[in-house]
Image 1 (tube, rainbow, N blue to C red):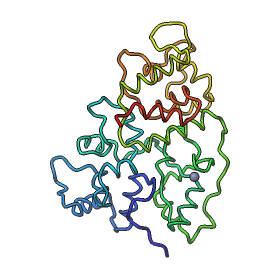
Image 2: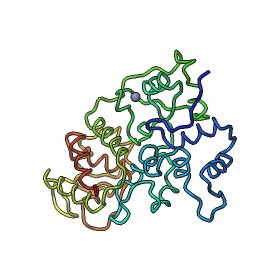
Image 3: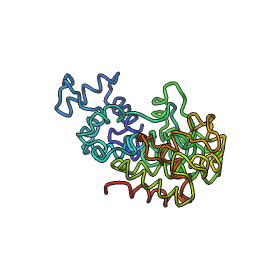
Image 4: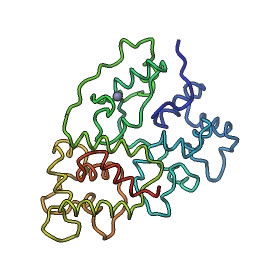
Length: 304
Ligand SMILES: [Zn+2]
């Protein structure tokens, strides 16, 4: 019988890591596990401002909170950009409220996995886990294997994974080709997955300047009035419409030549706020021909 270890696994999403620990340590509830975590970390679970669960998992795993956040949280896609003052490492003590609010979250309501990544994990470690890179809105294939992601069963999906061990390797799910070989979708997936490797948010103003400069170079409109094509017009031209329908909230309100707030406000100097990662990944996939060029531009908006 294979054992399931309690250390975090490569690209494992924190919420699944927590569940595995609960399972291995015999805890029957999250609150029981939380008490145990606090004890392991030498903290009280009755503190007025409780330590974020993400930080407790880091400390119990022998990692710094910033290292654990960078490798296991979805913070790099929840908070892609921020003002300069708050553009500090994900998981740092000064961003405790962010870790508390989103440190254990997943940006998709359903849970996905790649059958080939699962087989690799089971072969190498005798058990499977949920990867962060499979839980990104609009990323419908595995960027490593190019196969379609599968939705985990809705009830008891954690338990389902625990049963995928080396003993039943022969009955693991079969991989299927990705639904679309579309270049835009492929680029979007690579860019969005690339966000997960960043250790701190971009500086919002700097990112906006980068996007404006690139859009202007392409002859797109970066002001609130004018006759040039808008960045959102270009997005709607090159992204497959059925994919947009599934992944861009409010897409049905878009009219050619009319600004589409979530996209076009990222280019104008009027009031706007930072958007989640899927919006920036769509914008970058629209403005750049390759994921590498897009990531390099995104990187230039970071402090270091
Ligand atoms: Zn894969």
